[in-house]
Length: 473
Image (tube, rainbow, N blue to C red; front, side, top):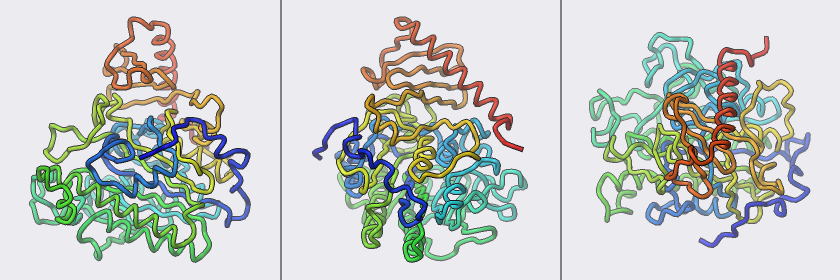
């Protein structure tokens, strides 16, 4: 792949950066947020993988901005998803881990804001931000008596939903696979998996649920987009694939693409290629409807790949970055990420600016010109377009991380990290040492001290938010 490697794209966007912003809804860009589940930084061709077949993602990336330092807000799924919809760190709203907390109604989501301003909104795939039912036993927490964590997407700004509370198998998602697929708990192979697709309160989906889960999801995205285009509505489509989260398996046609490898690897790689095929379907749909050029597409993963030692099919690659899922080392939070918008980003580029899933919110709000006077503060994200257009080509606002006993702060160059709630720290130069090999804590004492102070201040802010102090009466 040949790519123009530039970090400043102001020459591409120029003075017309927000030319699409208008009170006329016909001029507003469509927005698609695609997220894979447990996909490693090194699991796509556009990040250098030469084995896994991802032509659709690679072609999109080749025509947009690839972020070589794209970060999920957390090293596990639920918190990252919360950051995408609110622009805020999940610890501000009590979502500390997977299956922890729920998206509070006081939070002002991206879907709610866009819906107020003429967009139709849809969520498709994994939700993981609260339960979808109080009456039926569903997934990890639904229908088990705790009504306080009920927070489905249709209560958070989404007009159309095809959503699960949490994971499902990546092939035949309603059926429990064999134990070799991993993470089936106490379920019996061949039985009902017990996690359902919902389209609204009490509305369990029963049809078209066989085969590739990514295809099943895209089958619901397509009519949503067709209807939006037919009605001349700008749309937000949040597409959160389950792939390649455990239980991971795929069909024989995808396994055959990787016959030189073990069955476990065939299943993992094949599931990713199956997902990539559905991204291709999506792009073809946008082009056939003549809306591709004015559609913004973001792609990323919710965290790094699952640990290699946990299950045989967790074959994800961090491309050498330290750590994996659940870790705040780079391998747990540095994930594949790109942005495309053909009307505005016309020259392919690479960027080394640190970018986070929390940045979606302020970026989209600025692009669409939506008034944020009533938003919940503070916002942790920063406008990506502003960063890309800056002559300095840097972030100038550190990204904070919290997860369990871990905490970290990442600047344009340095990263401070602790695994023991701040009792001890490590310092890394991510520009010269992206694999976090050389701890500089004893040689850069002033830098380390300044970053620890900044990190502790940010953590204090998150703790205050978590007490509900950000919400207006």
